[in-house]
Length: 564
Image (cartoon, rainbow, N blue to C red; front, side, top):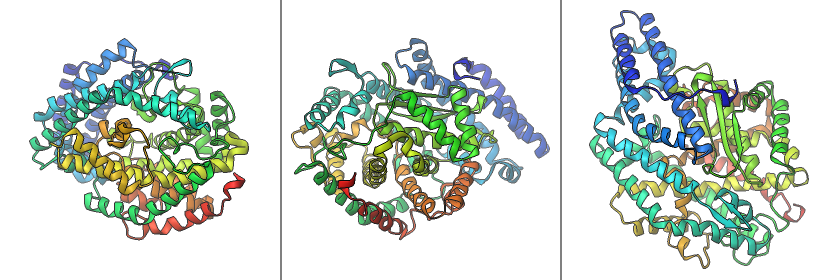
């Protein structure tokens, strides 16, 4: 069935509530596990339908934030999703307290039991109004980004529409486009500050109400980090500072010489080569058709998957007026369908987003056997392994998209992976400071951001942009606003993906089997369990970062810039 035929109907909350409570009572009063399991399956049917409707609304609203019907529906979900979460908490209590808990764990895994327990720790009826307010503020941020209407080069463009100009080989164009892009954030500075301050306060209030000292611990629990803590993350950040930041700095120095600038400023970071960055050598349709060819040749599983996505129109890839910024993959349970959303902008990002989000979607496609909504996706740091690794696994097919720019693309892709990790660390450490000291002023927050940039991104120069110099780069980072503490996940996953890059160069057959293994388990396992299933080394383990950085540096050093 095509996505356009997926039916949306707003659930009746009172009706759903009565049904769910009745089934939960039956779960709690089941005399045998067989009876309890039947009731769990019956409940999941209702919960998956609610999740389906919420997801359909979210997708269609992000495709066109100006659609009045889905705008109204989004308001409904912002208000009612915490109420549905309250009903889910009743289910989690019945699971955690079940006399058949060992049987439930046998069927759905220990990770599901842990998720149920964490959900109970992170929710109380007392915080429903706070959750509703958090949702409304996140929606306000999304709309603030999506409503950008910037007149540039004779056309009205959104933020995504400026990105290709920001990587132009013409420096004057890069300066002009960058100023237009960041001017929007400067014009809306007070609005971004206000939204973020309210988000910090409402999250801190929730943490206090739930018995935590601040939002940091609650944030980790909401992210379902069942097998690592902030001290382990802190140790990983130190590894990055010791081993990756120096290599990233050398790459920026090399980039500066390559593009002929004395000082690499923020307007230059997006340009890798004076001859121009690697770009796809065809239209949006060209990219999609070559995506079909690539996934047809990669494996039987990916061939079946990508044809399913195309035939059912489960991808909305091209930027257009009224479309929300960014890219994502989500899952529609009733139709057992992944969905990919992105904003193609005629840059190499189009290929990265295609392979990245397809990695998420492929994992979901391989995990459709899972009917428990909490474990369709694994936790975020785990699911980013699937996406980031897919970017590297598809390297042998990059010639289809980039032709003569293929080696240029590979160099950019690998070096960008290294450059990204310190930035991801800045986002993570920033959030620890913010939520440990929730009453900081907006100026203090910006100062902390700028200090962290100087620590992990010492190359960064803002030249005459006083707005960015005072520490506002993070305004555009949606995760900081909408998904607190969701960012170290990308860096942890990147270390795992780089291990897959290394692995696939040595033994592609076994490497692919390891990748399939971590896709098939879905979210039934924790992060460190998935790392083990993939035959990877934990990023928290001393020596892990050091074990991959030399081989990557040697590969990059072996490439002659003049040959690209």
